[in-house]
Length: 332
Ligand code: SF4
Ligand SMILES: [Zn+2]
Image 1 (cartoon, rainbow, N blue to C red):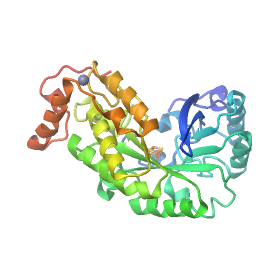
Image 2 (cartoon, protein in one colour):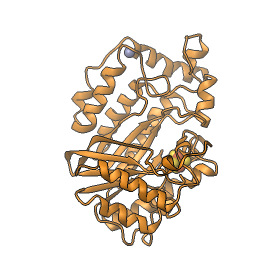
Image 3 (cartoon, protein in one colour):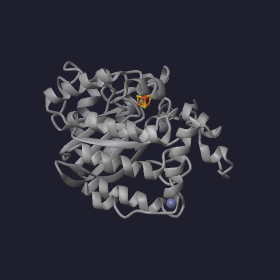
């Protein structure tokens, strides 16, 4: 891990603005990624697709975090939603000390909703005792299938742990956003689509919204090593459209997706001619929830996607079949 300068330790990883939905209303959202010591699990085994600890540092102190918070506040312009990410768990007191937590909340007085992420083990009645009532929590459940969670994602917690944490949030009246992973490694395209739809079905009753995150191949991860050898292809955008479409039909909560790396070789993609069009449709749908936004999409590559789903099944393999069959792909 690269040594970070004092300036870097005192600066958030990133700050940007986007839009989101609060109580059914489209609102401006302020997003900050604080640089903490990172997710404890990522320092143990870590999830197979996660490279977040490259942005973290065990050298970060509480004082550094205060400087980061000040820098974030300077950029805040009263957006109704604030999202505070840490590349780990905001509720882990080792990452964000308890006394800093209240400073974070009071720094964003104008916000109606403050969303942060946490692994389930930190979501306990005791740890949420003094939590700001504007809080909403996101949990990366990834999949509702215990075996996929253990073997393919290597998540380090169970579906039962998620259910328990969701119950605590429900008791506290805090909204839950569940993140699901589309296409963990070692799964065929078809199995990944089915798994994501079943997981939406499972997570919806516990959640205010469900966000489907297609794998984006991050450097120095298990998935990265597989991708470089041609043993993994990020999901097709056609798969994402199918998951959102069918997910919408099985769940009554908001289903959304905001893919990072979309349209690139490392992210969810189809072909150069349709990637942009489909990503735009996914974004429209994520706000409107109107299936018409996902209708009428077509491209020559759709037949290729359908064929590869069949071919992987026939060949009994999860590798990037097109690459093995000689397609020219570039791996940077
Ligand atoms: S729990 Fe989240 S931050 Fe931690 S290793 Fe897994 S994906 Fe990364
Ligand atoms: Zn296409």
